[in-house]
Image 1 (cartoon, one colour):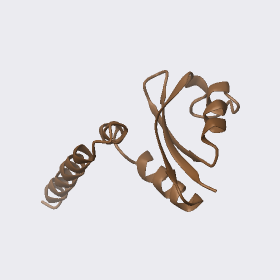
Image 2 (cartoon, rainbow, N blue to C red):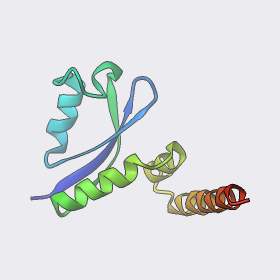
Image 3 (cartoon, helix red, strand yellow):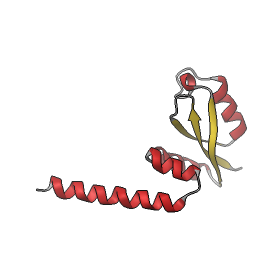
Length: 106
């Protein structure tokens, strides 16, 4: 069995990241609003903007949680398959964290 990690663009412009073993069924569930407490329920319609097939459930969950922690810019670079931009964003974020640490230790 394979699993998928996916990103949806919601009607309000926000992104939702999830994982599933049945991508078509899960997208339909988001579109239909199966779960009223779900993030996407009041943000429909949604559009699939990126997905990746992975081998295991654990890999899907790990990748989902990683992407959920990313900035909007990094997610958009992923959607464009622009791995150079992702690398540049990571370098900028690292420099900013190091700068913040130095300022905090003064």
